[in-house]
Length: 68
Length: 285
Image 1 (cartoon, one colour):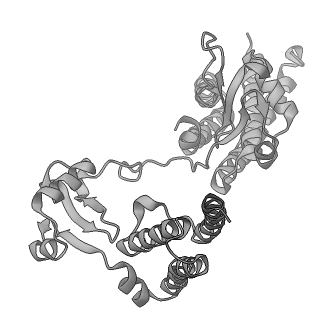
Image 2 (cartoon, one colour; image 1 turned 180 degrees about the horizontal axis):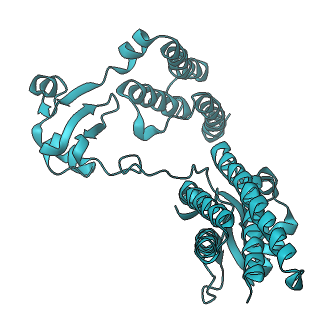
Image 3 (tube, chains in turn yellow, red; image 1 turned 180 degrees about the vertical axis):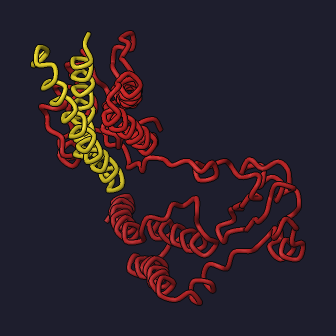
């Protein structure tokens, strides 16, 4: 498995986690819980932006793995 | 009018009257009565019995019962407004143990023997007097105990743990029927419930009781106890996934040669670790 496809898997996993956080934030009945999961969503956003940027530059340098 | 008809009519009349007056009296349970309320109820019940058995004129009886049940209501109202009235009516609580020392004079005033004090402490699961910081005899006769700081049960606060704030669980299935009011209060739909039941592999008819806790997890009790239900562990799984993603990012940062990417992976791995630490109370406890 190339670095690119490994990274893609990680990104997909993080997206899944973020989705669950969103769900929990929506379900939460207590303000503090809702806030904690919302904040977690934001942190995940930042992390995903970084990782997806890295993904793009990987695809640019090794175009043969693009879209895998 | 034959005597039995009169007794019947009086019984019904007094029953209705007493029922209405008792309903007005609020929600105090007879077990926690203060002496004042106990006397009031005793007198009222004797009056009711006398009136029913035609020992007194019906109108006089009703008048007396009315006074004995309505005046205490008035006193209760005054007691709500004024602490002085409350203390006169119900008496004050008596401190029995202060700073770990028994107050013998107060015990005497309350006519409480040492045996009785020990019995009351044992009822509160305190067998050693050395563990007690403070104990008070309430006006209703109950003894309440505060333990010494080092003998109190440990709380998350003592352990400096953060815990997830919890609200009361809502019962949404009872006897195989969906309770709609709690369900809508939670912001959930029947569709959600059916999906959850399907994924648990049970039919609605088979569920005796279903509760949703504050984490949004559904707990089911089935009529058929032979069926094993999976315990909800999505949160633990999510936490494990967070840690897995963090480990992967750390691996990438070690594997990559590009220094910029190395720093980026490391930074995000740290972010994930901080996030997991922040969410630990919400996901694991």
